[in-house]
Length: 156
Image (cartoon, rainbow, N blue to C red; front, top):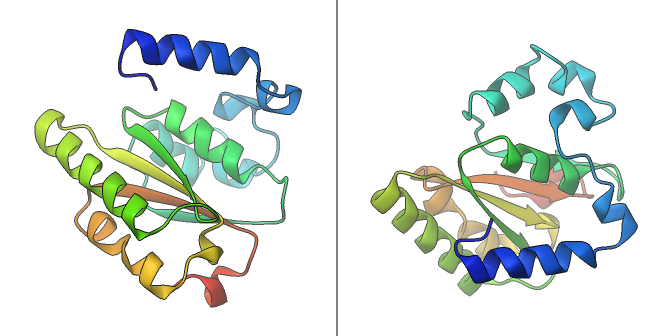
């Protein structure tokens, strides 16, 4: 979300140029097809999302199955700030910056932060460990996406 007038204009300009697939992404939980046992009306994940009480989750599945889309839909249903990182291009410094902003945001405004980390399986142990202070202290809710089995690619 844009924090100022210029940010809003930038987001609008970029959204007009987005690829068709991105412009057609579901925007609400009702628009998402599949996973009715989790996000259907009255189901566990939906109840947590609608109450803005979601804790950290790992979304695991093949490419193109909607992991990123679900994270964006969740962000649209909460009052939390939404930050995105890709483990392909981000490092420990980037993670620490997001966690610091989240801590500041929570302390100053009482607003939580969702960090969507795509391709978390590409982070090594030290990079994944950088997430721990933010998650353990409740400064960020981590939504991680991976195409690899998280039992082997994500630290406990």
